[in-house]
Length: 255
Ligand code: 13P
View 1 (tube, protein in one colour):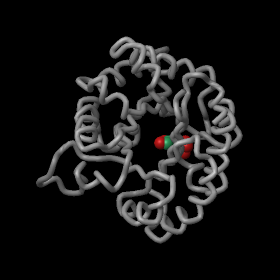
View 2 (cartoon, protein in one colour; view 1 turned 90 degrees about the horizontal axis):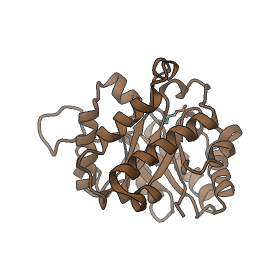
View 3 (tube, protein in one colour; view 1 turned 120 degrees about the horizontal axis):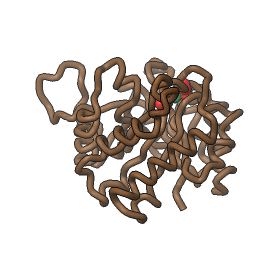
């Protein structure tokens, strides 16, 4: 049985004060749903304060990115050992970072290694564009992203990895993928991982869906066998919505 994982990616939202106030309100609301792993990913500016405010609660914290470099002249970047001990998770390869920051598959693989080497659990995001989906290239494209991101990651390390399938055209657009499409790609991701690492690793891997997830569609996604949770943008910025998503995940997965 895989523990469902719901992570809120706040992207570039909430000031320091807003972040702290938000997690203080959120934590007691999420507390009852112990069968679901609950993660919030604030901006770097708010990470330490949010982590402080959440200490002693079951809510975990993740960062939205990490450098693959250890230290040095990399203006604006955050090294993995700066996050170690502060956060448990880190999102890597988000389509917005691929698109706006020019992050490549090769770089994302380096970041995954850097994170794992410092005890951080990567949430590796993959997903196709609308053009690729319409051209029938979604599965092979996502497969290339997954294989590249996982290059030289060991079976043992895979226990720490989460993969998030986020079709680019469904992010922040309200155009969520159909459950059948999302389930197909998530099932394909699991079969790729089975091909590389075998049944045990594939069976234990947690795969999230992301892209316009909201209370009204959450149960449908969570009903799919290969979807173990959600990576949520917009709906994670509201206490009521995020709480409902966690509650629905618990309900759907019977935890
Ligand atoms: P939305 O839930 O706002 O579509 O964002 C999804 C996402 O990109 C999460 O990482």
